[in-house]
Image: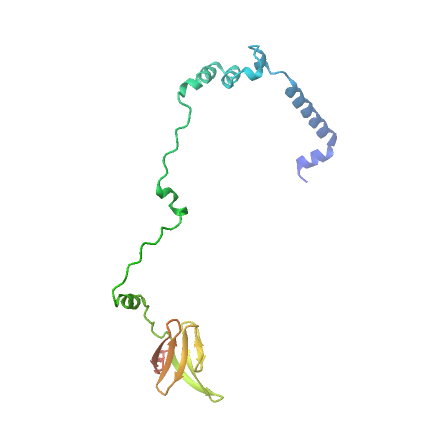
Length: 192
């Protein structure tokens, strides 16, 4: 136990007396009449804020407080400036589409052909093949793991193995549906 806690625990009556004296002193100060309200004889609602401040403040401050409304000749707020389009553009609906413009013949096919993303290179290396239960499988080395794939299997969610030939694999890139032939060359052995 700390020293202060031990002192309070050993003198509970002293703590109660100190609390009672503080409560009586607070009540006495709260019930005292305010001398600033009786010095001019005016009632409280008739007095202005500057006269209340002036009666309580030192003379130098009282003089500046009495002059306060005069130092601000136009205390009214100016009108808000006109709002521009850029102020509300994030919350505005998008503009209406313009009129349809007919395309020239062949322009649509050219724009679609330009927008087609090319099929990426097959990202796996051929390691080898084996046959298990009458089904041929190939082993493919990917960036993070080795895949054992039979015809019809999907590798990495994007490539489907369609056929295994003696010298090549036929795979389909699923996002485009484009088929390609991959040569079966074993990955070169790395020197150890």
